[in-house]
Length: 324
Ligand code: DGY
Image 1 (cartoon, protein in one colour):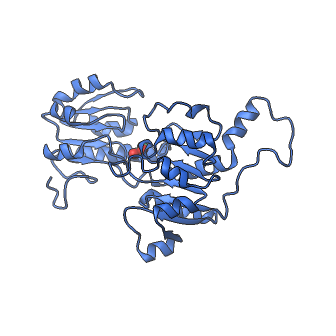
Image 2 (cartoon, helix red, strand yellow):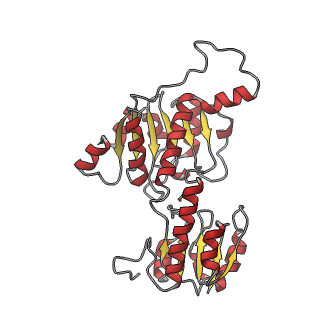
Image 3 (tube, helix red, strand yellow):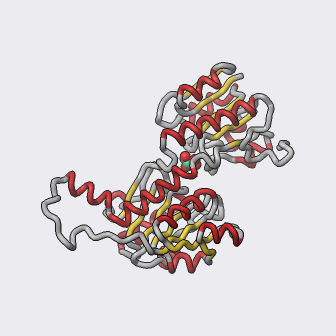
């Protein structure tokens, strides 16, 4: 069968597909152009895509042979899953394998923002490190502070576990509440969104992007945060109103932010890159060799199952019986 792979995969994973199928791989790191994607999808049986490909109604309308969509990633806001279901095409993702890598990067951003790590690096490189002084480059302590986690799924829980090691108090808000036992084990307590925003020293976002979470943090929410608070986003850019965030960082209504994702990725809102009080990363939450290899492998498992007419192990729209 014919398979379209829209971004480079590790060789050992790719060979699991090429041994039985004809593969067209977009063997570059820049995303596949929309026109090329629309053109290539016409005679394809399997699609292994990434978050930079928009898999919408128009594209699915041009894919009469498509039997499976295997996303190389956990977030699927770029895929019209409803339309795929109407066309009986299973859609699968890669949950679980990137939890630790993303939670680690969340903590890297918390520490980088609190301790001004990137500013310090820039200063040393610029040749401006001339002396040590007691009041020089003061940051903020992380231990003993309150971390507010918005979205307590796998990654939110993994962040809470790390926060316990830093002796932080953790409050959370999300669509559903954890059970008493899980709350006890993770040492977290449920809070309203408003209280979380008012009380937290660090607010970290871990919700998927959807109609209910788009601009979940906007001007109103930012204004409720402490002026000493820091906002961390390793989830999806549009969860934050980036224009409002730039204004809040500029006016000092919050202290700083650590961002791995952007509202109009890869573009940044005007003024964001000029601010000193924000750490900016290029959407690299899952970017470890181990995790990216596991993600590709999992996407490959999903793809091969779909091509064989079986339920992909991580199907998002298959239902418990496996039927769409
Ligand atoms: C995902 O999987 O959705 C991440 O954002 C990229 O790894």
